[in-house]
Length: 99
Image (cartoon, rainbow, N blue to C red; front, side, top):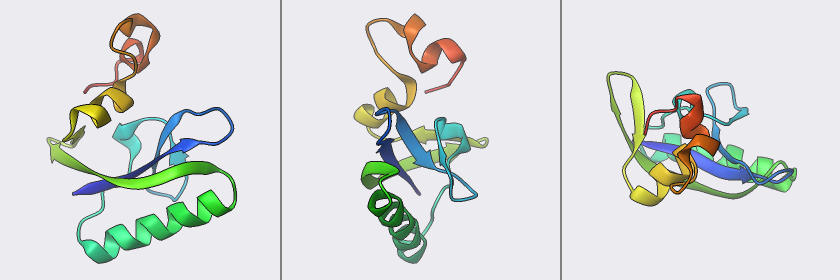
Protein backbone atom coordinates (compact mmCIF):
# COMPACT_ATOMS: atom_id res chain seq x y z
CA UNK A 1 0.00 0.00 0.00
CA UNK A 2 1.17 3.48 -0.81
CA UNK A 3 0.28 7.11 -0.39
CA UNK A 4 1.44 10.05 -2.51
CA UNK A 5 3.34 12.79 -0.68
CA UNK A 6 4.99 16.11 -1.52
CA UNK A 7 5.71 19.51 -0.02
CA UNK A 8 3.36 22.43 -0.52
CA UNK A 9 5.19 24.98 -2.64
CA UNK A 10 3.70 27.99 -0.85
CA UNK A 11 4.98 27.17 2.65
CA UNK A 12 6.97 23.91 2.49
CA UNK A 13 4.52 21.91 4.60
CA UNK A 14 4.47 18.15 4.12
CA UNK A 15 1.24 17.13 2.37
CA UNK A 16 -0.43 13.95 1.12
CA UNK A 17 -2.83 13.41 -1.73
CA UNK A 18 -6.30 13.08 -0.23
CA UNK A 19 -9.40 11.16 -1.27
CA UNK A 20 -10.87 14.04 -3.27
CA UNK A 21 -7.62 14.91 -5.08
CA UNK A 22 -6.76 17.77 -2.75
CA UNK A 23 -3.54 17.98 -0.76
CA UNK A 24 -4.04 17.35 2.97
CA UNK A 25 -1.75 18.08 5.91
CA UNK A 26 -2.59 14.93 7.88
CA UNK A 27 -1.51 11.48 6.76
CA UNK A 28 -4.71 10.20 8.39
CA UNK A 29 -6.63 11.93 5.57
CA UNK A 30 -4.45 10.56 2.75
CA UNK A 31 -5.82 8.31 0.04
CA UNK A 32 -4.24 4.85 0.10
CA UNK A 33 -3.35 3.41 -3.30
CA UNK A 34 -3.11 -0.32 -3.97
CA UNK A 35 -1.62 -1.72 -7.16
CA UNK A 36 0.69 -0.26 -9.78
CA UNK A 37 -2.10 1.29 -11.86
CA UNK A 38 -3.64 3.09 -8.90
CA UNK A 39 -0.24 4.39 -7.78
CA UNK A 40 0.48 5.58 -11.33
CA UNK A 41 -2.83 7.49 -11.30
CA UNK A 42 -1.91 9.12 -8.00
CA UNK A 43 1.53 10.07 -9.28
CA UNK A 44 -0.07 11.55 -12.41
CA UNK A 45 -2.30 13.73 -10.20
CA UNK A 46 0.80 14.73 -8.27
CA UNK A 47 2.69 15.58 -11.45
CA UNK A 48 -0.20 17.79 -12.55
CA UNK A 49 -0.19 19.57 -9.18
CA UNK A 50 3.57 20.03 -9.48
CA UNK A 51 3.12 21.46 -12.98
CA UNK A 52 0.51 23.87 -11.55
CA UNK A 53 3.04 24.89 -8.86
CA UNK A 54 0.90 23.69 -5.97
CA UNK A 55 3.43 21.16 -4.65
CA UNK A 56 7.02 20.09 -5.21
CA UNK A 57 8.86 16.77 -4.85
CA UNK A 58 5.96 14.38 -5.44
CA UNK A 59 6.67 10.71 -4.71
CA UNK A 60 5.02 7.52 -3.48
CA UNK A 61 5.72 6.08 -0.06
CA UNK A 62 4.99 2.73 1.54
CA UNK A 63 2.46 2.57 4.36
CA UNK A 64 0.62 -0.01 6.40
CA UNK A 65 -3.01 0.31 7.43
CA UNK A 66 -4.18 -1.32 10.64
CA UNK A 67 -7.54 -0.52 12.23
CA UNK A 68 -7.93 2.32 9.70
CA UNK A 69 -4.68 3.94 10.88
CA UNK A 70 -2.19 4.80 8.14
CA UNK A 71 1.40 4.33 9.30
CA UNK A 72 4.49 5.06 7.19
CA UNK A 73 6.88 2.12 6.87
CA UNK A 74 10.16 4.06 6.83
CA UNK A 75 11.41 6.10 9.80
CA UNK A 76 12.04 9.13 7.56
CA UNK A 77 8.40 9.16 6.53
CA UNK A 78 7.19 8.72 10.11
CA UNK A 79 9.19 11.81 11.06
CA UNK A 80 7.74 13.76 8.11
CA UNK A 81 4.25 12.71 9.22
CA UNK A 82 4.64 13.70 12.86
CA UNK A 83 6.98 16.68 12.88
CA UNK A 84 10.25 17.48 14.66
CA UNK A 85 11.81 14.90 16.93
CA UNK A 86 13.57 17.33 19.28
CA UNK A 87 10.61 19.46 20.33
CA UNK A 88 7.43 17.43 19.87
CA UNK A 89 5.33 20.12 21.55
CA UNK A 90 5.83 22.27 18.42
CA UNK A 91 5.12 19.66 15.77
CA UNK A 92 2.15 17.75 14.53
CA UNK A 93 2.55 15.52 17.59
CA UNK A 94 1.15 18.36 19.66
CA UNK A 95 -1.99 18.14 17.56
CA UNK A 96 -2.51 14.42 18.32
CA UNK A 97 -1.30 12.87 15.07
CA UNK A 98 -0.34 9.25 15.73
CA UNK A 99 2.86 7.92 14.21
